[in-house]
Image 1 (cartoon, rainbow, N blue to C red):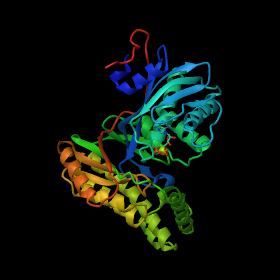
Image 2: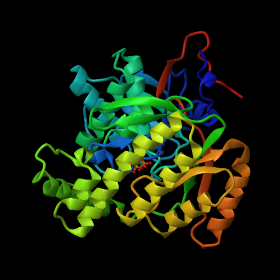
Image 3: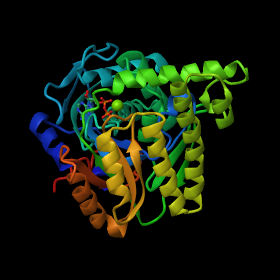
Image 4: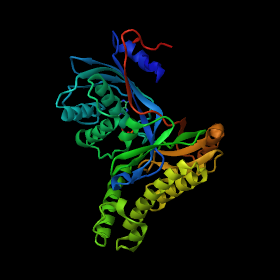
Length: 397
Ligand code: ADP
Ligand code: MG
């Protein structure tokens, strides 16, 4: 089976031909993701609602007796290590090495080294989770090559564990679950407490727009840690009145308003509790194709992130406003941790070009850095295809 039936990537084919002789045995691919609603809820055991997007990281691979060695079109030196080792520092090999090590933990055997080429269509560092796509690309590849038989959900949880334990990033499970479990035309409602998920169809005739401010997220890491701490303080205050409360997931708005806590902590808790309710209402609005409700909820989410959670910035506010005023906009809000990065919008497909032109013009008035706007759709999650003997030739168009 030719992989181009699923995904065509002529750059990837050319990279293989340039760097390797013989044939790859496997094509692996995993998507980036965008969160539609449910922001800063995941570390409070709440709800998130991401969709995998049709921007993917693709790889052609085969096993090798030597070291792991994969060339990326987006990185200088190839990723090189022996499976079972961890890789320190900023080298992108740390993601693949972490996945190999976590597979070893789970299976009791060291996965074979891989060699090959990788090409990504996901902008890196914009909050679209190019890192989870990288993890899932390799985990899906190993799972297929070694016939481990892990489900996509198990691979997602393994990727999150690999990031936490061996890359050293405190990540929830949203990015990895979206990249592993995405379905075409659907978004995934995820309960981060139970790790259950449900795929919900997006309305027909609607595209997803990614509106990247390209503002570097300089403050994001320290502010993120502050928010995690403030959420915990809110729980500590509320648990005095209600010992059953384990996280903000269990809390009502009445409890947030009545418990004794400082006003900043109260605002943070109000965002998380109201955002969980909005995620549920957003799911219901999708089910009933209630487009005005989708729009209202996305806008309330943005305003709550700006006013109560204080993780927006001038650029994200300007971008959201530009989207709200543009033709064809169903819903728009900032997405991701904040302080830069992207807004997401649902846009009527027939009006997409007008939408984008209008956003570009209104946002352009502010004189911020040139944004990157693109159209995408909800896409299938990670996949790996063994390239058969008779039709293993690379697609060559
Ligand atoms: P995000 O996941 O939001 O894109 P992160 O900072 O979590 O941002 O992950 C970006 C990192 O992932 C990069 O610095 C790089 O180490 C790695 N990465 C992602 N895609 C690629 C790629 N195509 N080639 C090499 N490294 C990549
Ligand atoms: Mg990431």
